[in-house]
Image (cartoon, rainbow, N blue to C red):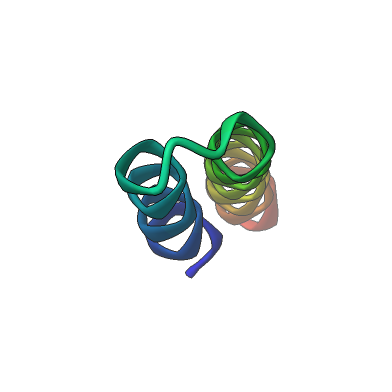
Length: 47
């Protein structure tokens, strides 16, 4: 979810030439990737 939202924000920032929005989107996308990895690790540890 965060990855998709971050991608949208990043693209919107690029289109509007807003570097703050672009950076915010990149950060949110990264947070989504980290969250996804944590979920995968938790699944492995549950087994």
